[in-house]
Amino acid sequence: MRNLHHGVWPAGRPFSLTPSPNSVFYNLLAATERHPDRTAIWYYGRMISYAQLLDQVNRLAGYLHRRAGIGPNDRVALYMQNAPQFVIAYYAILAANAVIVPVNPMCRGAELAHILRDSGARAVVFGAELGEELPEDLAPAACISVRYSDYVPADPEIPLPQALGTPVETVVGTSWQEALAAELSPPEHDRTPQDWCIIPYSSGTTGMPKGCLHTHASVNATIFAYPEWVGMGEGARVLATLPFCHVTGMQNSMNMPILVGGTIHILTRWNAQAAARVIERKLIGHWRSITTMMIDFLSLPGIEKYDLSSLEGVGGGGAQMPEAVARKMARLIGLDYLEAYGLTETMAPSHMNPPDAPRAQCLGIPIFDVDSRIIDPETLAELGPNQPGEIVIHGPQVFQCYWGRPEETEAAFIEIAGKRFLRSGDIGYYDDQGYFYFTDRLKRMVNVSGLKVWPAEVEAILHGHPEIAEACIVADPDPRTGEAVRAVIVPARGRDALPLDALTEWCRSNMAAYKVPKRFEFREALPRSGTGKVLWRLL
Image 1 (cartoon, rainbow, N blue to C red):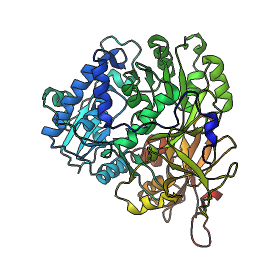
Image 2: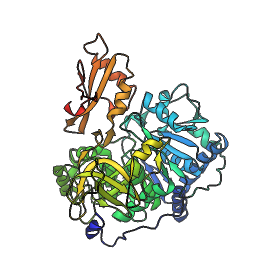
Image 3: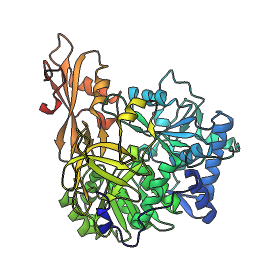
Image 4: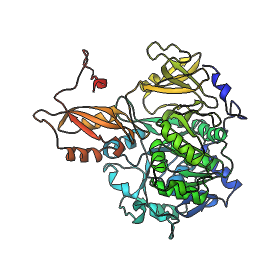
């Protein structure tokens, strides 16, 4: 497509950004040096300054290094909900020169065990309520348990979610407070842009999730790009409702505010009324959400009575925003919903709508230093405007490789004119002005409220059930979440069907809640092609 999109480029923005010469941890050091007394984190009324944040980061880094023996490139898993401890642990792992392995707190059983073992995590920082989910045979150098309620103020500014009302005890590992109280000094931080930074896991089409290895350079690429793109200024007030364990919430709602010395307003659980109150009372300027959240927000009784005028930028990704919802939001807030597109492999956005020329149900245009094209998925030939094909991406935010999977890494890339492009697995096209649009999926995937469910992963887990012979996962339309998971199951010999309550409960104990099938269908056999492949599209 070359530079068609430069004609709609955000006014006053450069076409290219100079890469940061530092690590991601340096962003916190710089913000603290500029504004040590500024509030870095607001948590239901509890305020943590940048100086306090860095102090706790260094204490935990010291514990990880000196008590757990964590050193350069060691992996440390982060398995918890949004809370101040997530931010502290994230930067402490980086301060210890180690590598973050974020794990969705909804992960259960086989999912969690796979990620911990596959990554070779040597330590785990986890929410106390999740302690029983840790594999019994897991033996990392350190297990540090977190109680979110420890950071809740005595007199919260807004009502607390039930999860924060009662402290949770755990008998697993060392407590967070004990780790910080040790007051051990951190190692000298020596990471460069080329060093390993984080391994978020992306579910795949061929089985269990696989880790996407990112460097400090690829993580910083989107951290620095977003504030420049939308005009997020120094000291920005940001509402964090997306999970930090996923790259969009992690980058847009945690790392970017720290870059600009802003304040992160954290909600552990999504609640539309709580979000409205925080926006009004704390004069929130930026909020990144998903379609389901915005629908809930706009449906809140009396939402028009809240003063939302402080908002400067609202947007999201993961699933297209219905045009009717976008219009309702524009009438209420006076802003366009800025849609974006990105993958775990690109550490959040590779495409975003220009703030001054956005389009509805559009992926946007390639952002700074991104070269994105369309290819024929069969012949790999490059296609032109308005010709649907596979979206491929070249840019500084593209990951290095799939952790421990050289063959899958090789299959994920294609070379065009000497450049290495990531194959997205998504079908789309770009128009005559360079705007990209999504049309279909090359890979099988179910999109539940913006959370990606890869059928092969769920099928692999279901095949571990002793009374299931075969399983196939497909998507059903859903009015609220966009799509829902349906499982088509062939019971083991001698069974016509399985008890739904027991099957649902088994799924809940072995996979994240959003992956649990909403509907089960039982058949004697799955439809197959002449070569034996399951014809999932027929289902």
